[in-house]
Length: 204
Image (cartoon, rainbow, N blue to C red; front, side, top):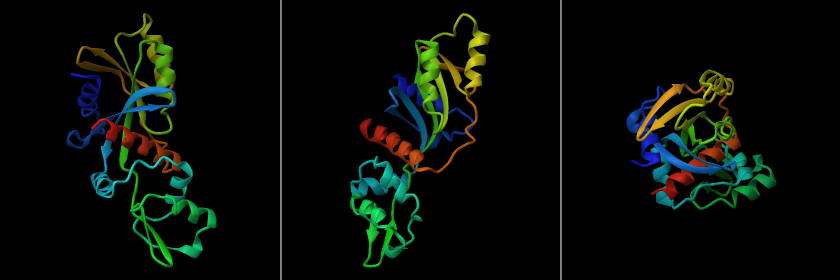
């Protein structure tokens, strides 16, 4: 069983996971290679496939889109010229137009649950996992704990990073990741969901 399959099976056992509604996608972000377990928004993903919409990675565009209510027409005069210029760049189907309104038709395609990184070096693993702190829970996978386990786990706990030990195809959680309580529906968070969605497209 590969790393992604092992992580997917493991992530499905976590408290916030519904095992029939969880997937894992590889990501390369912030100079780090990892995996993100997520709940897919099936309706959004089906819509994007039907329309042939790629992941949207323009942060300014996402910032504009997130202030438009989903499926609710917005009068064009209420938008700034810069916002209108950005919206006219979106792929067909992401928004719909009339002579007087624009309507957003898409939303974040996934709900990230937990980011997972593999680490051969403890300090490097902590740094890599920390890069996902704004977006979801985090844990790192190691083959063994450092010699001074208590000190190492206390350090990981301080940063809110969980730790799992991998033996072959088995993962054992030795430190639960901190709950993700500071979630904000920002443009940066939407951008992160698009990056995860891109990972799902690449891995098909």
